[in-house]
Every structure is written in C-alpha cells, then in structure tokens.
Image (cartoon, rainbow, N blue to C red; front, side, top):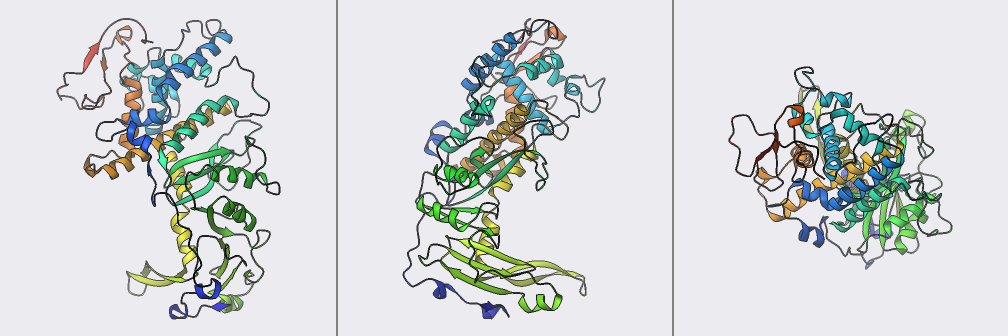
Amino acid sequence: MIKALGRTDYGSLASLFYPSGTPVLAYTGPEVGCPSAKADRLLDPFVSEPLDYFNAFIPEVERHNKWKQHSNVYATTQGASTDKYPNFKPFSAAEIDINVGLLIRNGLSPVPDFRYNFTPPSSNFVFGDDRVIAALPGGYGRYKEFRAFFHLQDPRLAEPPDQPFWKLKPIFDVVRTNSEELWYLGKHVSLDEQDCGFQGRSALKDKIKFKKEGDGFLADCICEGGYTWTFHFRRDPLPISSLEKDAADLHNRCLMLLERFPFDWNCVWMDNLFISRRFMQWGYKRNVLMVGVARASGRGVPDSVVQVEAKTVGELARVAGTVKVARTADFKILAASIYDNKPVHVLTSIHNKVDMVEKVRKIWDVTESRKRDLEYNRLNVIDDYNNNMNGVDIADQLRNQYRLDGPWMRQRKWWFALFLWALGVATVNAYLLYRRQCQLRGVDEKKVLNHLEFNTKLAESLCFGEGNLVAGEARGRTRVVIGRKRGLVSPTQPPGKKQKENTSVNTSKGGIDA
C-alpha cells in the first residue's frame, strides 16, 4: 500500500509491478482517427457540399430507389387512394428527399406542431415560413401521407421472427457499413451505450433511469471524438453464434463490435457497466486493450486492491489519498485504486506503470476575492480515463444539439424514432468527416462550415437541390430553383443580392418531378 501524503511522495510505481523489458504493444493504425482512402476518393472539402457527405453515408440510390419504392408499395397495400387519403399520389424521389430535409430542418428550427411549418407568416408570425410551403406542394397533408406510408423495408417480405429490428435493417446496415468504411479509427476509442428515447409502447423498449433521454432503445456503440463508428442495439440478437460461451450477452455483443476493428491493439475506454477482468482477457485475445473504472466486487478486482468506503469523518481523513496497485501474473492486466471522496477502482491492460500526475485548475479564493491556481495530484490512469472516455458522450451531444425530432415531436411508430436516430447519426458523422478532411487538407478555418451551417446547407440541398424542382404556381407562388453545385445562390440569400446565372425560376404547372 502506498499512502498519499504529498505530491513528492509519489514516483513511478512501474518497477513495483512490471519487470524491466516488459513489451509495450504498439497500435498498428493512425494515432488519431482520419478519413479512409475511400472517403478521400469520394469527397473533397474544396468541392464537395454537405449533401455529398450525407450521400456518402446514406446514398441517393437508397433514398431515391428503395425508400421511394417501398413507401409506394406500402401505400398501395394500405389502399392509400381511398378513405383517409383520397387524393394520394405515389411519392417521387424528390419528395422523399424533401421530407428528410424538412426533418433535418426541424432539428434546426423545431416547432411544437409540424403543421405550423406550412402556415404562411401572415397567419403565424413565429413559425410561418413561405419557403417551407414552397418546398412541398400539398403542404401538411402531403407530409402526413409521408409519415403514414414511409417505409424503409420492402413490405412484401415476411418479417423474420428472429429480427425484431427488421423494419430498420436497411438504414442500420447502410449507416453502419459506410461509417466503418469511411473512417480509420485512431488509437483511443470509447465503448458506451447511446439512448434513443421513445415514450410510446414497444416490446423492444428498455426502462432507462440513468439517462436524461429516459425510456427508449439502447445501442452499444464504438465512438471516437463523437464519430459513431459502429453500433448494435441490445434487443437485437447477435448475428453470429456466441463468441465466448461463458460470457454474458452484453460482453458477447461488445466482443462482436471489437472484432470489427481493422487494426491491432486499439485502446478501448469504458465505464463500470462493461469492464471486468475476464472481458479484458477476451479482448486481449482479439488484440484489443481496455481500461475502465470497475465495480469493487464481481468484476475481478483483486482483494488486495479493494478499498472500503469510510463511515466517519476521522476514518475518511485517515484513508484519503491511499493508493493500492496489483497486477496479474502474466503482466497483462493491472488493477489500481485510489481513495478520493470515495474509493475508485480501475482495471487496465493499456498502462505499464502507475504514477501520479500534477494538475492545475482555477478556483475562487473567497478570502482574496479572485481566482487562483490550485495544484493537485491525480492518478495517471484516472487522468487518461477522463480524457479518453468521452467519445460516445460527444456523439450524444452533437446528435442532440440539432436532434431531428426536436423537443416536442412524439412518435407513435417505435421504428420511426429509431429512423430519426439513425438519420441523426449519419448527419453527425458526415459533419465530423467533413471537418476532419478540412483540417487535413488545410482548408482555411474561416471557410469551414460549423455544425449549424453544415446542417442548414444539407437541409436546403435536400429540399431545393438539383432534381428537387417543384413548381409553386399551383399555390400562387414562384419557386426559386437551387442547384447543388458550389457557387450557386443560397436559398437564404439576403434580399437585394443579385442572383447568379445558374439560378433559374420554375413556374411550370404540375407536381413534383420523379
């Protein structure tokens, strides 16, 4: 046992637990995540638009062919032209994109009721927007038809009983596959769960009290810096036989994700829900290193390292700062604990030494009425954990920053909530891929789009892009057609600015071009 008395009482503890010459396993991929060779072939930040990045994750052929066809087939099987929707006409590829664009726009400018989007500004000062009305002829009625009949999967196919997420399989597969193929993982990644909230009824929904999102669907995800590289929902059965016979479903599911790594010796950071000594050994067999805070019991933390929570103030003063360290006989796993406000236990196969690092933070000095620096010590394993564990949290933050369902939209269809989640993941990944390419290609920081600008351009391109040319004369309005090529006038161009040559005005009659 090493008791903390002051900063100078710590030194490197490596010699106590690792013999000299212990090999350090080197990661075989890039130190920091970066676009793959495929991404560099498809996309160029100097030329490509946000829609091009979005298309890399959800290709146009997926939306324009499969989504359109499956939605129209489903509408036919439901007798869409009778009763409730007597004026229904088959969806065009443009309409699919327009409705997706309006959902992304709702994340930027959410409304308490989606029909408010289609009210003129003269009657709704807050939410009315003529451009939204112009984007989708048929207005809110057409949007309701989209919500009623939109389908990702072919409705003529029988739903397999062992695939509860069958309706979402097309978008899950395409987003997962492209996310993996377009990004080379860096050395440090995080493993944690993402939550897709849902307030309706579903047998697949989990009771979730530990996340702000609340009840919904949980997916285990591998993320780096907010980029969701791969995922698997917990209620979705494993597509392969059990990887480890003695492992719980949680660990087998995570091992399946870890086996998708293209390089050896990734460092995976996780919390105490996942980490255990046996799980780390299974990961080591697959050339994966792990570290995470661990529960004191039932997770393989050695008894010699376990610290018991103090019951009295005097006992707390006596044990505060105590550090304990142990290792396995094969030198693959190191266990450490430190008594901070409470005992914290850590298991790691990444670190080959335990040390204390000096940290400085600003605090408010009441006596001097000013901020001053406070020096303190932190265990190096804990410090590394704090700096590398947040990949999934950043992904949640970016997705929820402009979440497509906004704060008010509610879903009666459980699968539509997951569709919005997958759409949000694709949008965030597209944005992060764009930012990383701009950084690596030396694009002037002043010209790089921020998250808001990226999503705005993406929504505009989907609603007013090349091919989505909708006549507004039937509604008594003139529609400005916006092309997708860089340099064309933006739909949000301020009044009085001269439009460029490539901008045209479409006043022809009829509906949306297929």
